[in-house]
Length: 99
Image (cartoon, one colour):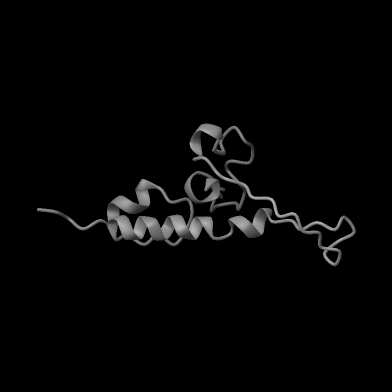
C-alpha cells in the first residue's frame, strides 16, 4: 500500500538524478497510515527452498496490493491510473465535468 499510495522516486529529467534521494523527502507510510492486517503463519517446512527450510513471502505476497488499489479507484470513480503513486493530481483531471 505504501508504494501504491505514498512512495514516489522523483527523477530530475535534465540530469537523471533522484531528487528525493533520502527519507527526508520520501514519504514512507507509518503504522497510523495502514489498516489492520492479519498475518497467517503456515506450520509447514519446505526443505527444497533454501538451507533454512523456510519460504519468504514478503514481496510475493504484496505484489497484487497496488493493482487492487488501482482497480478500487477505477471502480469508485471511473479513472484508470497506470502508474504509482495513486494520487489526486492524477484522478482529478480525468474526472468527467459535471454541469
